[in-house]
Image (cartoon, rainbow, N blue to C red; front, side):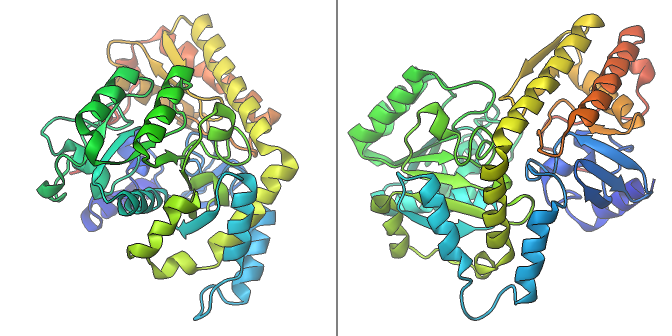
Length: 431
C-alpha cells in the first residue's frame, strides 16, 4: 500500500504524522488505512494505488457538505483566482459575504473572517475578553487546540475528556493561564450555576456548541440566557460542526439559542479554507481595540467558495437532504445491529450520525467494523458526516455492506477477524 508507506515516512518527517488529529490512520485502521488520496469526486475517494472508496465517514472532516470537487463551487473559485487570489488591495467579496451572513443572521451587525474553526473561536474569545476586560471563560463542547481552551487541563485533571477528546496534554500552554477556562457539561444547569457563583466577577464570556449528540433542554438554554443577561457577558455559540447542517446558517436558529457571537467554518465553504465570526456590534466593535490580523485571512478563494456554497444551500435545501440521509444511515445501523444481535448505541444529530459498540472492548469492534467495510470499498467508521453527494444508490450499497459486516462480526470473535492493531481512542504520541 503506497499510502501506508508514505504514512510511515510522514511519521519521521511530521510530528504526529498529520496536520489534523482526526486524520491519523491510527484512529481508523492502524497499518491498513489508505491514509492519502489522489483525487475525490462526489462522495468517492481514490487512494494512491487507484482504489476507489465510497466515503461514509468524515467527508473531509465535515467540510464537503455538497460533495467533493463540486463543480459549481470550483468553477467560481477558478474564475476568481485567475484574476488574482491575494493582492495589495482587498477582495470585494469580503463585504458581500459579510452582508450575506448578516442577512442570514439578522440579530448580528458585524463580521470578521479567518481560515479555520479553531482560530476563529480564539478570535471570538479574544474579542469577548477585550470587551469585558475579564479573563475567565466558561465553556462546554469542543473548541479547538488554542491555549485558551487547553488551559482547562492545567489543573492536572483531564477536564476536557467530556468535550469530545480525552488525553489532551496542555504541554506548552503557559501555566499562568491556569484558572482562566472552566468547562461545564452540556445540559448540566447546576454545574453552570456553580461556576457562575464562584467566578461571576471575572467572567469574560460563555462559549458553547449549540448541539452535539443531544438537543439542549429548554431549561439549559434559558439558564444560559439568564446568566448572559444578568452578568452582561457575551454568549459565543461555536457553530463549526453544526452550522449549516440543520438549516441555512447556524443551528442556534432552530434550537432557540440567542448568541452575541456565532462562529462558523467547515460547511460554509465546501472544502476551501474559510471561517467567520459573526456578532452583535456592541461586542464585535471591541475587535478594534485589540490586535487581530493575518495576511491569509484576506485571500479570495474562501470568500468566493462560501458565497457560492451558501447560494447552493439555499437553492437546493441542502440541510433537508443531509438530515434525511443521516436519518437513513441511523436506520441502517439500527436494523442491521438488531438483525444480527450486535449491541450498539446510536446518537448524534441526523446530519452527523454516530454509534458506539456496547461490547467489552468497543475499540476492537470499531476497528474490525472499519476493516471489513474498507474491504468492501467503503471509508467507514462509527461516525458519518452526511453529504448532498450521498444519493439513494450509495445508501443502498452502504446498507448491503453494513449488513454483511455485522453478519460477519456476529459469527466470529472479532479478535479472529482483526488483521492489524486496535485503533486509538485518545490523543497520544505516535512512534
